[in-house]
Image (cartoon, rainbow, N blue to C red; front, side):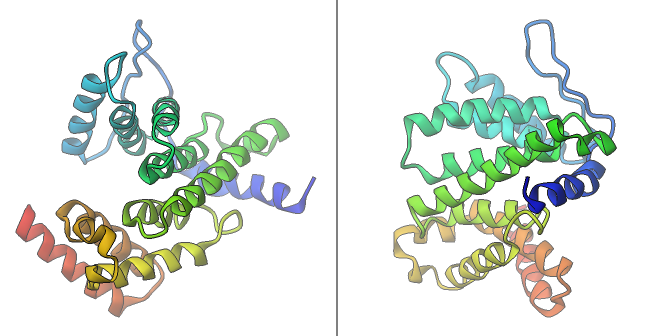
Length: 243
């Protein structure tokens, strides 16, 4: 057994083990996961629930359903929803192997499974549970890199990788890689013509809002106050413009 594995189990117990309290994977009689959340982002949760209801099923779109389940998993910290996201996004990836976003969200969903693994606290240090969480971390890392490799210029896949990796324990993943992603995205955001293939995405309100929010938070956490202030100002202006 590698030293990384033993260190990783301990880090997961400390870092991921602190993130979930009072969330259990329960379901209705028909198997539909019940949402248990104290989140304040109710509009996003309501939208995700509506998308899930519309797209989950035989005639739905697996990517949209998977993205909805992913959003619910992020907000509720319920691993049942992360499993739903993985299931749907695996189907989407199978249907669209060259669509970077499907692979990127699938990777990020695996990181949510590691974060919200049902067994918390000291029990995670046992080899079985510890290995399961390590599997999800390593699978997340591999899928996120695969997504960027499909199209290295895709700003959506690169932002998903950056935002996911930077929030995982540094002993397990490469935070320098995440920051390199953010720095590249900042260059594209400042001048979308540097990435003509995806210039429309870089100018879109949805992508810019996600990027400003994620990058401002990361820069603040790293103590880069001047850069953080710049992107916080951009985020404030964006919210005034788009609400």
